[in-house]
Length: 287
Image (cartoon, rainbow, N blue to C red; front, side, top):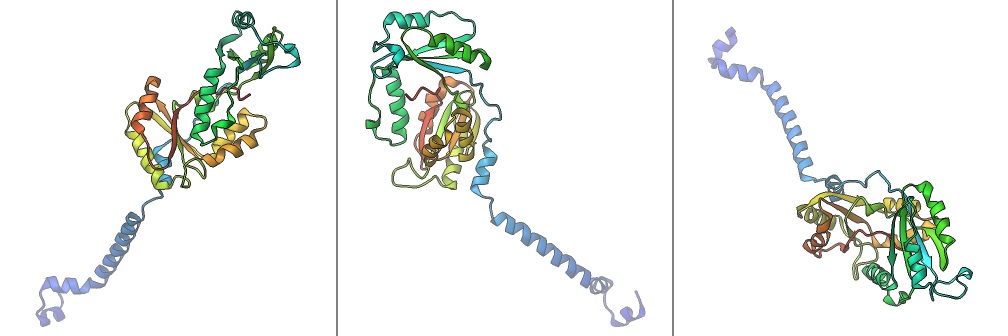
């Protein structure tokens, strides 16, 4: 302590404080700035869309093998010159079923009633008039082969059989092997009296899905990925995408046990922003 300090009679603690006051003010100012910045960040939460993406997953990178075909048999609504004006008989259908070729891994018949119900359910979810779906007596088979290289030879084999109208490839749904439940979101169409699902609604839907039992993974499909699935499956993809895009985006749910898909849909229930919740099923011919 110097002579000046002694002469003023100031305590040593006050002298130290007076000498270091400018530095203390600077430190306090810096601390205030840092604290204000931290509080500002806390007061401005991140976008709910970003939160939803962080809590869900992008679509898987693995695409399904396109190894499926369908056989359209001759019927009243599906006749070609090859049919000679006649419908396929039970014997013709049995002959198709009895073909034994190791390249074929599955072959399943569908009748008109089953296809009608499947297509009606699909369209009614999108508010399409049921009058667009006249019932027919068209019958067909859906099959698959071991490798894509086997597809053309097997289709040729069935095309040469009696009362077969045509045989064509049948696209494999991208989500068929990657998810069990689709939670379709409201788009510009699809939910009467309102517009697309909001970010807050997406966040609430995703939170509800994650809270359900038996959930293995939840994926988010935006319209860009939807376009990719159509382009991978269909040669003339743009009209199909244009018709589907207004119905919005989707969450896809992978379950630990597929058998609980209908229970998952029941537990999810209805929520603002959900257009529909359905099981993920194989594609069927649209003819």
